[in-house]
Amino acid sequence: MTRPVIITCAVTGGEHSIALRNPHVPVTPEEIANECIAAAKAGAAVAHIHVRDIETKAATMDLALYREVVTRLRASNTDIIINLTCGPGAFYIPSDDNPQVAGPGSDLASPEARVAHILELKPEICSVDVVTFNHGGRVFMNTAAHLEQMAELIKSVGTKPELEAFDLGNVLHAKDLIKRGVINGPGLFQFCLGIPWGAPATVESMSYLRSHLPDDAVWAGFGVAAMEFPMAAAAVLLGGHVRVGLEDNIFLERGKLAEGNAPLVARAVDIIESIGDRVATPDEAREILGLR
Image (tube, rainbow, N blue to C red; front, top):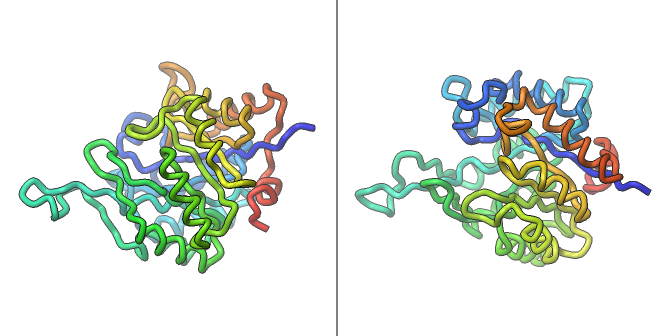
């Protein structure tokens, strides 16, 4: 029997540069919602969603923008699973004069502020980055205490956390949170590969992270840039699920910009089917992920 494989589409992300490099990266709530709908029609069961400042195109935590995207999706005729990010609010840059004080470009926010949109909108899934690491010229910082506070708040509204792991230590930290009951087991994991300075986008990395998961955990994996499709194939072969989208890669092939998220999802569908598996529907994905 063929295995149903879940495709998550990360439709826009929070990196400022990708919106400047590809005009098809959605920015407004209407554009983001429409890209989620197009991804669903192409085969995605889950939409992973950030929002952007409409004027600057930079990442934002504006609750009104999240509210509009979710309202549009829930009013549409798609039943795609909504997965809202909790990533913004974790960047720290020490000031030149006093490294104990945040400098320009920092966006550190309280755990309550980082999950305010989850508490109000109650998506089925939200992403939780179980990582602190150097990211460009900034530190992406998630202290243990902040992660636990976020997890408890997320649990209070019944949203399932997707545990984003960038290296082995992140998997081990997430397992500890599950063991102590901070997060309900067996866990939903997303391996984020190829982001400096995390684990590289290789089959060896993906297999190694998988080998340390809790028993019966559900997992997916992705690679950034040129490794998006190779890592999609690796995830299927290793028994996981797949993520693609303009957040992770703005090209359909070398030198050819993707004209939206749907072509990236369609490529993932081709990969899954060529291996002999099939694409999971949103309802099948809900069963696999324990959302009902």
